View 1 (cartoon, rainbow, N blue to C red):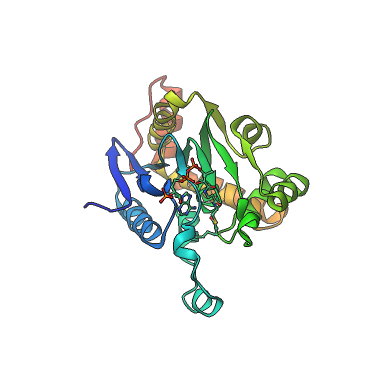
View 2: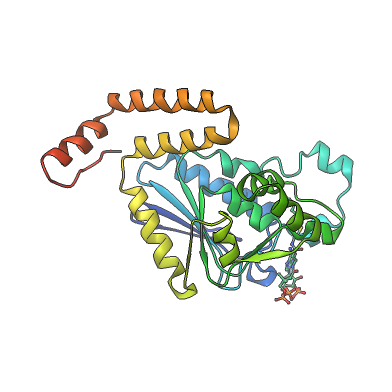
Length: 256
Ligand code: CO8
């Protein structure tokens, strides 16, 4: 299957998606988000895939939603078509998704990275939600997710001014998991993705569900959910294999 806005590969148990609209710094248009959803649907169904990695180019992860596509839109059309409604499906995926970001991750591009489970950044990465400078606001969850990550003061300052932050600041305030030299970004991110893909699929997906609960409910509810997931994991062969391998001093071999 070939796509017009994406390059898609499988490397072992990792599904690698490279955003590929170099002429527009990977600006995200409807076609790109539709193709991305299609690819992620396939990865979710494919038992051979244990982790997904989304990346862009050295210059841009994605410089925003496509301003040229959005410029003529009017409210009735965006409302009736539920514009952006399909974007959030990236955040609904059950398998882990890592964003490997170099260069610009702005507007909708930053929002896409924030929908992933974590971001590994090149030292060249820049993150921002500059929508205010275009007379609009973010709409694909960026305000909610950024504010939860960095707190109200920094989120307000960034959103109201439209300024971006470099990779060092992004790591300091919890936006990215790790910063690596630009030349090593893909290798480091693939390494991380392969490691995750090699763990128990059940345990990994349960962990993702538990972490997502942090944002969705109260502490009490989250604690109960986490405990129930922990109890449920004892129904899986991977629990027997993982703990058995530890006791027998060998490497575990997890099933799918
Ligand atoms: N949309 C469409 N085209 C873009 C975008 C974009 N977001 N960003 C860059 N491009 C195009 C440029 O128009 C240019 O095309 P052309 O060669 O035909 O003129 C090409 O990419 C290269 O860009 P530049 O020449 O500007 O490259 P520079 O290196 O000089 O500058 C910048 C790089 C600083 C990243 C600059 O391109 C820029 O400021 N881009 C716009 C950033 C921005 O404002 N992003 C937010 C967009 S709004 C948004 O994301 C709303 C999100 C709402 C929710 C999600 C919805 C879908």
